Image (cartoon, rainbow, N blue to C red; front, side, top):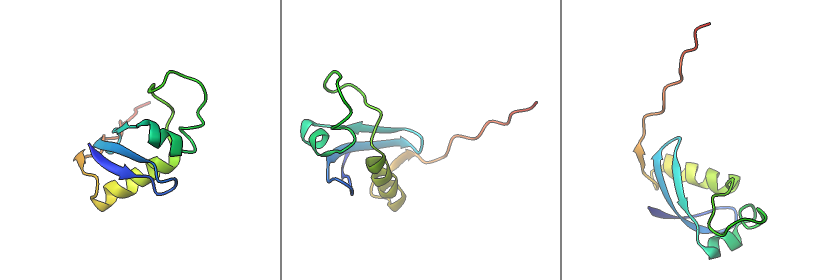
Length: 84
């Protein structure tokens, strides 16, 4: 996992891009406290998965596109062909 700082709020998390469709993120209490979306997501068990943060998602995407966060399997999942 690689450290990454959100360009919106400055939260620092650990990120791993397994593919363009799958991202793993590790939050700590400090990062959760800085994030405007995760920090205000309401009650729940500490450390439980949350919906996510659009600003952090955008930061991760930009970092992956720039090569700062490697994508382990860069081939996109093919779109299934639906025959009617």
